[in-house]
Image (cartoon, rainbow over all chains, first blue to last red; front, side):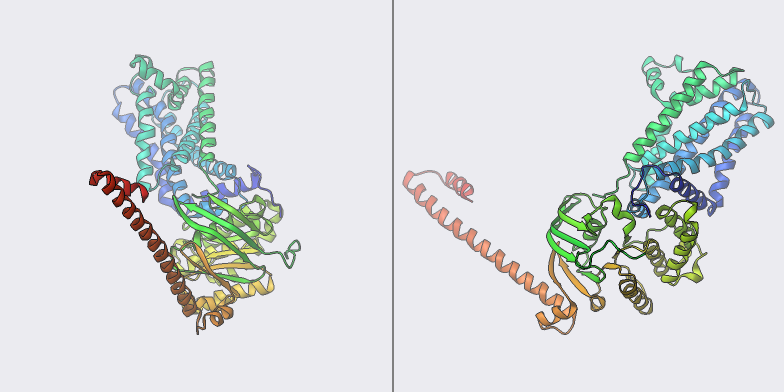
Length: 252
Length: 299
């Protein structure tokens, strides 16, 4: 048996991802909620804007990016909080498991769930509800996946600062709502107060929503689209690393 | 997997001046102790005396540890120790939304990752489940098990790696007498057949009789480090429980005497000081307040 613990081992990462998915499989209601709620919401939105299909296109596309971010944020922050409070985290870190294995395992597992969730919601929007996107549906899916990873990363990170589930769910309005208000969903960002516009420039969700709208309005991949997915992916990676730093092998 | 690297005379755990600060409080105060290899060492003392903190320090999950603490020849917490130590926390730390076997499969995959080890993993999982007598419940969801069964799942996880050192934090709490006996038989079997060193804590004194050696703890200090027989003989007691109480009373009495001595010393100093101040005051005609301030200073 090898005695060293590499920061990242593929086999241990895959084992962790498999374990997280297996846990989820014992909880069919959560799976159903994860998959069906976004589809229902986007359907609701379609009929809210029944007389205004263009608004449905913009807001619908934005929501396809926002759903995975919010749901993965919630699921991950609770799941990792449970890992911290149940003692399994302490046990895992006393074993030869790299912190990177745990983080990447979670990202992989919830990334897979996000792909399923986004496939359903995107397919429903494009082919049933008539969302009119000029670009490729695969690009919509790519942005949704990156958004899900960002949500997973943020959830992992904030779970370190929550002592209970009550606190963890409160981080949702604290971390997600400001981004939701400033991401350009309600009003174009260049019409906001200049201070808010500057703030929205540094919040990753702004790029997630912009990326969706780039696909919506352009037949080809634009330079802005590249910038958007790079910013979202980079933010996710950065926050994942911050999350790894909050996992301590020793308790105080 | 026997432990060829271990020499017969090296201690499994060796602590010198071990001090731990946890949550702003000094929980362990300069402890010196050793744990012999291949034996069962019981760590006994009332709850809150620092047993769990000591175990966390040995396993390497405790921060703010000062002094020397060597485990299996390496400083505690060294990465190479992780697969060699099995650790069972007081609260069962397993995934309640997985079955017993799924729990063990995952921890086994962390210990011995990769396809090449699949067969040996399956063997280790089945053996560990058998060791804790849960074969009939292998496919039950951990969340549906009773408290005692759940803590045995937690123990099974620690047995997976055939560890050289097994650290068990109150593993028999809440178990019925039959299970307790079975577990103690298992611990003795591990020590005798696999050469495992077992460090086990308990606040139930009748379990002490089953250990080869005992460390009695009280308020972050070690009261005694002896065999159960040695303890009883030394304190002229019939049971370890009696011996422990004897030692606690002795320590309390010693402490009281020491406190009394310090207090007496302080009172004496004070008396001398106030006498001196009083005479000075009288001589210089200073106010009473000044005298009091003076006295405060001497104190």
